[in-house]
Image (cartoon, rainbow, N blue to C red; front, side, top):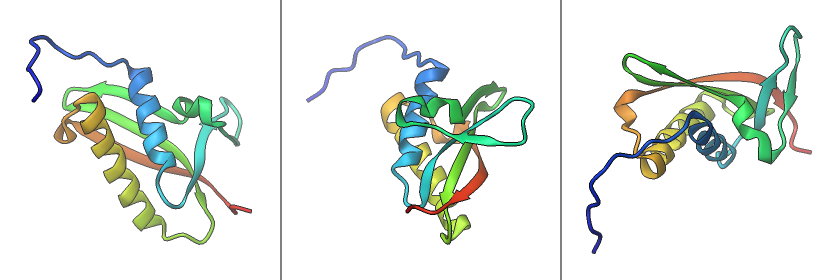
Length: 117
């Protein structure tokens, strides 16, 4: 049995980005997170400890906006992977950070396709 502890929970944007990045990496078809290089028309695949750089978190009047920059595996059904990804990130943020999915807007940007091999 759990006791209710009065107070509020405050989660930083970096923690939200980390949670979203790790949730994204657990989805089938997602090869990695991508970092946009400023002023350059290219992207960089991020190592596991820097996933938050592929997630932009911003507050809006309706809640939170997450922009996920991902690299997908070549040949996967992009629509299905993106739907699963949005659902997984939303669920994980709800469970871990207590963020109401109704107050969360997720935009997925496919920055590259890559073979797993």
